[in-house]
Image (cartoon, rainbow, N blue to C red; front, top):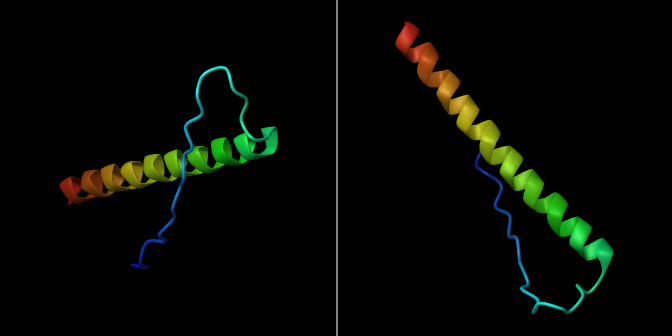
Length: 57
């Protein structure tokens, strides 16, 4: 099995009422977070499937 790819996500908290630095940066952050969540869901589904197959044998 290949080694996991290490990724770093930096989240900057902005005080209420101030605008984010740019809409493009906000979109990139949302996409990065969505990818991370999607990969985690895929890993969990894969593990669940492996467990089911192991129980069936």
